Image (cartoon, rainbow, N blue to C red; front, side, top):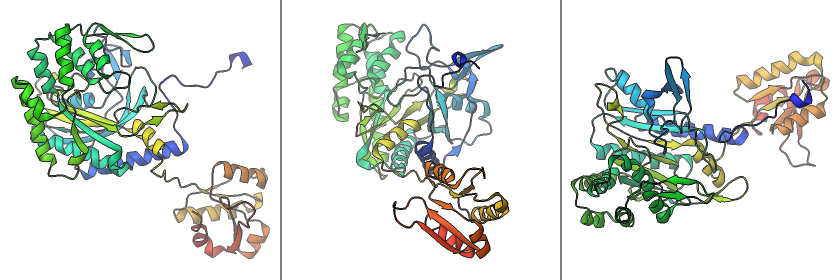
Length: 465
């Protein structure tokens, strides 16, 4: 291939390779999360990456004229198919398809990748891993949602966060929906109003940004314009005044419409159940949490961190929510003949990973292999015998795969790979039935090499691994 025609290695925006410590820590977090989900009685489910587009729905896009603009969709002959953008929509399809065989309530967890065709940056990816827990079926909502709040707190603490490093915000979408109904805001404007409110705590928004989105349009720092909900000055003002209220009792006094009162009562019942658990001090009300996805219709939850983080350029960034979700009573009822409510949350595993790497509080638990150097091709059988002994004793180990390379190059490889020890055996060792190991992590200049009888191999090598 001509030099001019050679490919340039690289990735599209919003995607990344993960390896070494980052990937090891991610796998550790996933294992912790999964074990905690199982401890709370949830069962695993795995669904395909693709769903039929009409089944997955269009709940994500801000552009009403192009409702599938935020997802990756493809023509598959007779039907369009879409890469899942979350794990709740596939769950709804699965439950509708299999509800006769499932135990209800159905408590399921799923840890899989999702895909979003949106702007990337600052721990926002276009492919990322979510860890979901959902409860589907007719239950006491206060009990189910309290269980989810307790599970969020328990899981994040198990992952290595301290109690003062995160907080869980809860609200009820009915409170805002009641206000919107009271203001007689038209149906086509409702979702734009909801999404505007949900952006209050997002970086660069605040009350002014939300107010702009409630009115005609908002222009961000880059000059990009987002069309607003086109509310009147009076309508926007009343919603902004609502957003300033922080106290549940004050809200109960100010909002008298039945739907808002119903949402307030559900929150009061939730906190009653939470008081029986261990994490009630982690959970606070925030009435601006309404969730951007249109299928939520009651309880909402969003989990944020109490510390800032820096990107690869050293610039301070706001990570945003690392765990969020809510209640959806109509998501499954979109499928004919099935009307089953659900509630759930999703942990953004890659966003949590980004935060944990900033804190450096959780060890990655990397166990690098011991390496057996090949000093002489004629002893290859002996080297493989040592390799078998190590692996039979569950010690990570490998043999250098090119006997033509000299010892220096083999040790360079071992150091680059951060192997803790090298086994270096030549004619003398095999004649005397001994083993020589070199401590590759020892202090430079010290004697880091030791020779001992072959039968002591496992005990000696465990001192370094």
